[in-house]
Amino acid sequence: MKPFKGTAFNVTDVLGLASRYRGMMVLGTLLSLALFMAAAEVIPKKYKSSFVLTIYAKYFQSPLTRDLLSEVTDAGEMKSQREALIHQALGPEFLDSLDRKYGIYHPVPGPQTMPSFVSKTLARLKAVGAEWGVFHAQPPETGNSAAQQDLLARIQIFNFNNMTFQVSFIDSDASVSFQVTQDIYAQVIRSLLETRTRNLVTLRNAIRKRLESLSFNMASAPDPRASLRPRLLREELADVRGQLRALGAQYTEEHPLIAELREREKVLVRWLDSAPQGGPGPASERGGDAFLGDKSGVSAQEMYNDLTKKLDYLNIALESDKTQQEDYFSLQIPPIYPKAPLWPKKSLFALWGFAGGLIGTLFLAALRDYFDRSTLHADGLAGRLGIPLLGGLPVFPGRRLSG
Image (cartoon, rainbow, N blue to C red):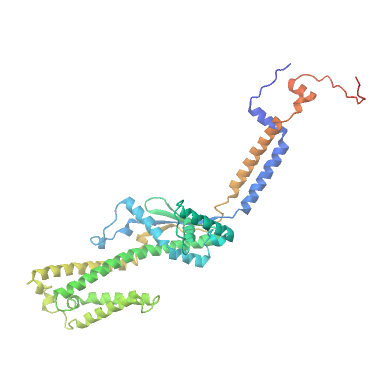
């Protein structure tokens, strides 16, 4: 008689188990695969579109304004400033404009989306908890702040290195995802240019105000530039009028910026009208020697000349920024239309369905085999012990024997 096999688990037992219950395992695996593939079709899809942008170090540097603006040279600080500039471009106004254009704000759960009795109960519990000091009452969110935060969470910014960033957007519509990504790229570029230009213009305006204060202290003439360098005044007047034309297309005459530029235009026109028509006078030909008799006048004149030179450099830098934008940043990978959803992935769901069905049916087969009582029958016991079966005892129905 062969010895009874132990309960050790080995590969042969698994293969034997799979062979005995192959029908159930095949059917269960196919059913699991079909369920997972159906789930991949039913689950809401998410599409991702992205672009890769590089912001060069020259954006933070300018040879013409090196002695006016502190340049950023540290790699870590440049990385932080680049990322901050990208986040700065995604302001609340831009997010609201995206929602007005595409309607992409997700509804945020709140009292307006809950049944009335539930919202009232929650409000009552919050009030009681605040009275007992269980938690601090928080002011309700105003406007679209919650929806804006949800939209910002769908905009992902990933840095490849210190100066290259991948910006992506996720939405349930592939076309919307692609179009919003294009809008985000245009907004980031526009914000980068406006930020750099705004810094230079702010510095230029500060220098202009300083020159005006010096001009009134140096001579009785309204502005020495009117007699010394009238070309600067004409260039400044042309620049002011150009800004007025650009702003006039967006704002009315009552806007503060336009009102300020109008006042500046009047001052420049008055200074040019007061300039001598016969050319520079003797004092101007001597390069400002009229101020040599006064020590304070000499220092003011030197400061005036130095600021005038820096003002020229700033004007040149502003003009060069209009034609050298590609030196500051470049688009490494443009926004790409998503061809397949980011989630759910059919290949991944098919793998999960096949693995889950195979493992699940194998486990069920093992349980069924474990609880199978067929070994208690004569033929099964004979096969397990390896001994021949002589026969079985017949059962004859009959009357019960009475004692």
